[in-house]
Length: 114
Length: 114
Image (cartoon, rainbow over all chains, first blue to last red; front, side):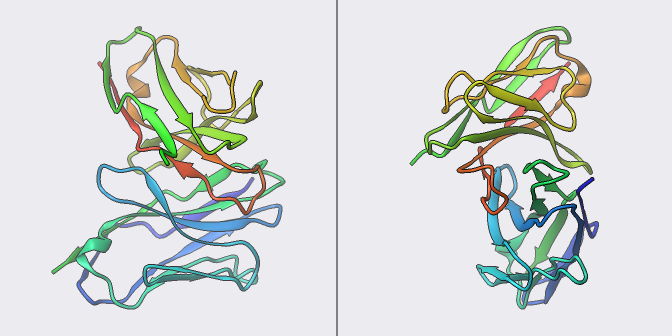
């Protein structure tokens, strides 16, 4: 079935460091890919998305490129801030095996130190 | 714009008690779903609905019932609470069942079963 694998955390960085959170997927259909962010005590918010191969999603300085050849959707940011501390979830949505439901990775907790 | 509203935000139950978690959305979304979030497990789909009168099971449906009598509301029922159902529950909705539509999440219900 459809699945998402993302790097396990926690990840601890100093402010202004570069961030990469790896995400790979398996899907029987043609998925759309998403990154969600969850700040402490809150629900999930959509951070960015890409709906077809080679699309780049971007928001708040974060970027991720839909790579069909490597089935990847890695999240990157050039300079993280303390306010980026949160849990990040990679997710896919596709017809086919997952019937259009959202499939999540297990999440990566990011802590940014001043 | 309220988006997705979940009530209550916190609840403590005793084993064997029943309760209903409420979810309402004001975006006229056809698709609604319930997830549970547990440490190290990411988000797992419990039940989902693609429209009024239509529901289906997700990955972890046992112990939960749902109904969808209106487009706006999608309550989740625990008939006989068990400690294993201690979790954070999120309701989500989206405009279409199409794969390129992101889901909008509520703020969650934190449920403890003693």
